[in-house]
Image (cartoon, rainbow, N blue to C red; front, side, top):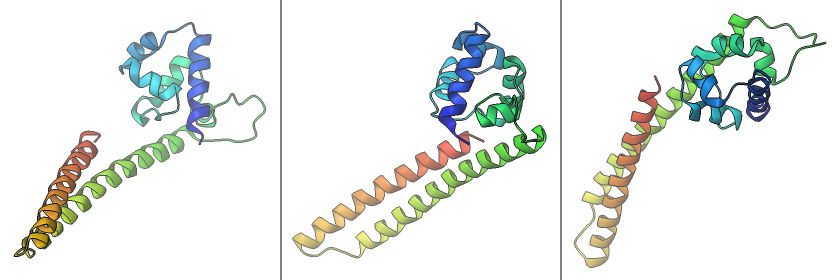
Length: 153
């Protein structure tokens, strides 16, 4: 699955239908920035809009996933299987983000505990402060990554 090829294919089919990104986005209930991200290969369409996207562009789901029209293709895909695979892939990405966030939070807590055990001399105080700062930054990043993963659900 080549995101860039899929994006170029979406752009080509949209232009063939004389639709702007804004018009396509309006029909699909997404933002024009989302359509732009698809067309530049920065992200894939969410599985929840793939069927409607394909209907609007008059293409099949397998053509979308291949990034080209299936004129003489011998490949046969079941649309439901492709959509289920896409849904599972996107769900795993979200879970990966949540897990990464939790790991960052736990590592931040561990660094904070470690920083509490240092101190006494100027050098140890410096490293304790450094570890405490790193712990706070790491936990903040973990909260952000986890919240982003949960928001995508």
